[in-house]
Every structure is written in structure tokens, then in C-alpha cells.
Image (cartoon, rainbow, N blue to C red; front, top):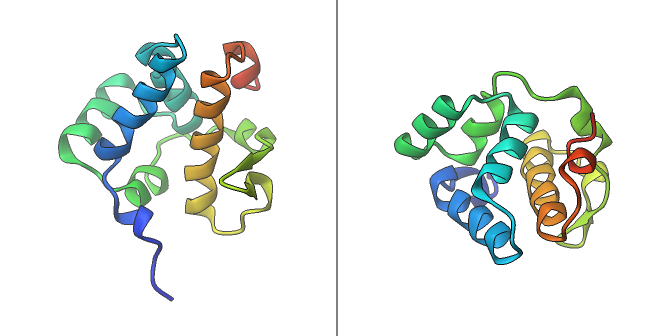
Length: 116
């Protein structure tokens, strides 16, 4: 089975889309970065290096230093699919991030987004 095309997409390509979505709704780049740090464990410096190297999404998620164990608490629908029902681990991680950015854009408080 071939990998979904999204796996080979550069994180540097989707990151500005996350920022733009958040900023259109009055949220900030800093909040997007906080969500990414919470989900993956990357530091700001590591995140910047990954953006510079144009790391693909599969590598971005499979090599995340400290995936947050609370990410399993992320529930809901993204692109018509319940994130908790996705069986492919990398796709689930991608959709977790999509869901968290959606929540940010909808005005949800950071304390609730970061399910700790």
C-alpha cells in the first residue's frame, strides 16, 4: 500500500496554513507553537530547524521527541472522520494537530485545548 501524499508534504508547507487560520480568527503564532510543543515535545529551536530543513510530515511526527500522552484525549471530527477512530498512527497525529488548530480558531481557551 502506498503512503498518503500528505505524509511526504513538508511541514514547512502546512505550518503557514495553521498560522494563517489562527490569525484570521484573532489567535497568534505563539499559540500555534504552544499547541505544537504540547503535542510533540519539540522546542521552539527544534521546530525552527525542522521548518528550515522542510521535514516531511511523517518524519515530523514519527521523530517527535515527547509525544504528549494526553493527546489520546483529543476527540472529534476532522475532514469528516473521527480522530479517535483513525487507526494509522501518523495520520492520527496529523489529524490531532488539525483538530487542535481548529479548536484554537474556534476561540476555545488554551487550557481546554491543551487537555492537561
